[in-house]
Length: 434
Image (tube, rainbow, N blue to C red; front, side):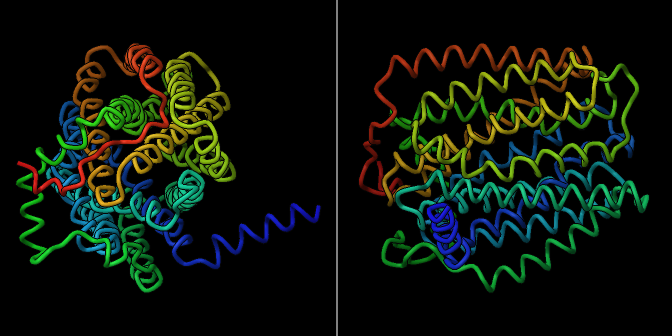
C-alpha cells in the first residue's frame, strides 16, 4: 500500500507539478474538444443541408489532402521558431473552423471550414508530438499515453456538450458549432499563458529570416520528405502509418452514417445524439488506460504491438455491421479505439525514437504527411463504394483492404531487421541537400 501511494505521489509530481509535462496533456484536451465536435458532425451537417454523397466524400477528403502539402514544411518550421507558435496557431484555426460551420448553410462554407481545420491540424499535431519528445527523453510512450488521456478528456467534454445541446436543449447543429467555437477560443487564450516553449534556442535550426525559411520549406518539401522517407528504419513505420490512417479516418468519416442509418441495428435508425453518446462512453472508459497503452509500446517495442492492434482493428470494423445491439456496437467501438490509439502511440514513438534530434520535427512532419495520405485515400476510394454498394458492404470492404495490407506489411516487418535499429539520418539539414 505504501509503495502504491508513493507511486501515485511520484506520478502527481511528474505530471501535475511539471508545466512542461502537463502542457501537452492540456493541449490535447483543448485540441480534441474542437476536433471531436467537428469530426463527429460535419458529415451529418453536410447531409442536412442537402449535399450529395460525392461532394461529402470530396470535402472529407480535402481535410487531409491539404495536409499532404502543409504538414512537412510546418513541422520543419517548428524546428526553427519553436513548438508553441505552431501549437496555438493550430488551436486558433480550430476555433475559426467551427465558427465558419456555425455560419454555413451551403457546402462551400463547409469547404472553407475544412480548409481552416486542415491548416490547424497541420500546425498542431506535429508540433505536439515533437513537444512530447522534447520534454520526455526516456519514456516517450508513457507521456504520449498521458497526452492521449488529455485528448480523451477533450473528446468526453466535446461529446457531452454535443449530447446536452442536441438531446436536452434541442439545439440545431449550427448552434453546437458556434458554442464550441467560442469555448475553444477562450480555452486557447487561457492556455497560451500557461504553456512554456519546449525547444531550447540552442538546438533550433538556424533561421536568418523565418518567413523566408518557411517559404523555402514549402519549396523543398518533397526533397525534404525524400530524405527521411529513404531511411529504411523509418520507411516501414511510414507504411504502417498509411494503413492505420486509412482505417482510422474511414471510421471517423463513416461511423456516424452507420449509426444514424442503423444498418447494424436492423434499419431502425438512431438519432444524432447517439453518435455523441457512443463517443462519450468510449472516451470515458479509455481515458484510464492511455498510460498503459504507452507502457506497452515502451516495453514491447514496435513490431508485435502494431501487428496485433491493426489485426484487431480489421476484425472490429467487419463486426460492426453484423451485430444487432447498440450495446455490442459500443463494446466493439471501444475495442477498436483502444487498438487504434495503441497503434498511433507505436508509430509516433518509433518515429521520434529513430529520428535524430535535429531532424525530429521533419521526421514527425513526414509521419504526418503519410497520415494525411492514408486518410485522403480512405474517403476518395471508399466514397464511391458507399454511394454504389451501401454502408454495410462499405465496412466489409474497408476491413478486407486493411487485412490484406497488414499481411503484406507484417511479412516485410518480421523479415526485416529488429525494430530497435537506429535511423541513420543525415547530419546536415534537408535544405542543404543537393
